[in-house]
Image (cartoon, rainbow, N blue to C red; front, side, top):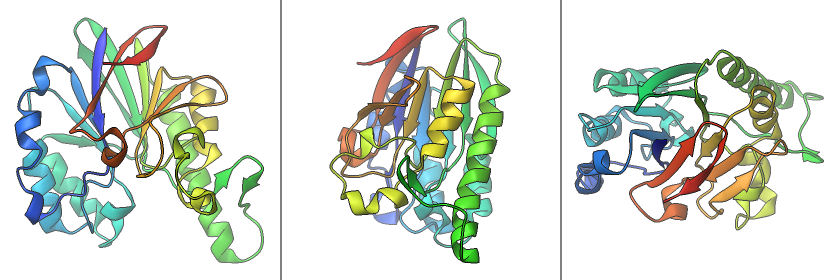
Length: 244
């Protein structure tokens, strides 16, 4: 069994330095790995990223992350990722890693994701170049996620994104903004490669539990949703995820 702790949308800045650390100090007692589902900063500044790096550095478990839209706001996402990496946090964007945890191999593929909407109510790469660029950006990200998941050889496989792959976990958000909260293309990528769990954030007013059309469990771990420093999911090969 692998115990996966996850949280997103912590939106840390200098005023929140150290707020999560007391809960994180005991993480090794209940989890084997920590996944961060983006929006780690408020506005994507390097000052804020330094707070994030120090908050999640030197924990008892490996820490893997994707960036979110807030982490891109200052237009220095590469430097943000480099800063986090320098503190031992693995930042994924179209890549995958495999960890040996308790005799099981955990594979995690991560991308930020993007918007576009969901089946029947989505944008298309047609018309103005801005619309084509918007949808093509999502297409490219979804393709990288699929490739990363397909490339994993492991016992338990997890997809980590910031944007949502499904509408299930958006319930509670205004339907008018669903196209800006995720895309069905992410779910297609996850279902095409298979996964045991998909984790995302971004939807502060959504719900925790959902699933892809192919039956992959999806969990919205935005901190305003889970209302804790992290949520833990226990996974075994070919066994559904359960919260503890």
